[in-house]
Image 1 (cartoon, rainbow, N blue to C red):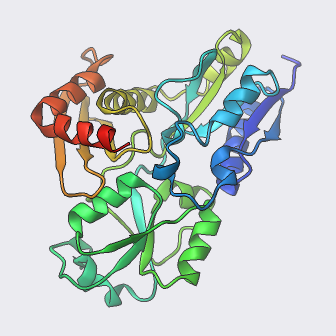
Image 2: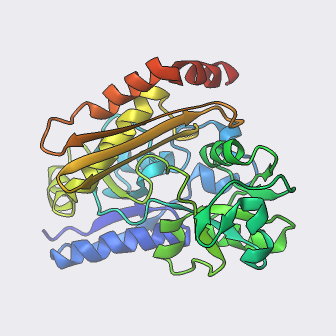
Length: 319
């Protein structure tokens, strides 16, 4: 194929890293490409908390428009930012192999100075004390999880790209902030003063990269399809179906994780009230060779019937 493929990407270091990875993978298949930089709505307003903006696809819509208007041929996204319902005319072309799905806490000072407030000792999470503590995040999911575990802590808003957010943590009087491990690890800037939040379930599809193109572009669908990781695509679909059936937005306190291990799919999911006071969750295991096309939706319906409906309705009514 002689055509130069135009890869749309946001301008942040992480977004460019992800788009460059796709460019490199395409080059291995003798596909020539170039990067086209597009600013998203989420990159323009860096002050308003994401849960207050309430715009579905705030980090992807500008790239969707560029695709539809034929200004780019494919777009590369952090999959957790992509709405569960793709825009008309746009199709999922590939999902790359997942990196770490975990959230991490980047703290200030020595770990020993905050271990009592977090209940973290000898690499284990235990019950914390009630000392004052302030953390930062723009994610309503992370906020809800944190307040569920630490109801006496204070939460501050933190916006910006990964580098900006790390700098803000150091310049603030906060005790720390929450980041996606994949984001800081991919661009090689994970601070030494960070710990994994093993008790916090991730956002659906966290750690995965999605490539999208126009649904009528058979060439892009074909050569991007060669980059698809079936296991990651399967797990991400289960997680996103769970999200869509429960509430449908990435700015909601819903978590989901599906993993394929030893021939089985292990799934955990939950929904919390934004203040962290209410929580409904579930865990499931099925054989990986069983039909799983609708499993995410089926499990979401089960959770709705076992405490999740009240929480979901409360979130809808608050908007």
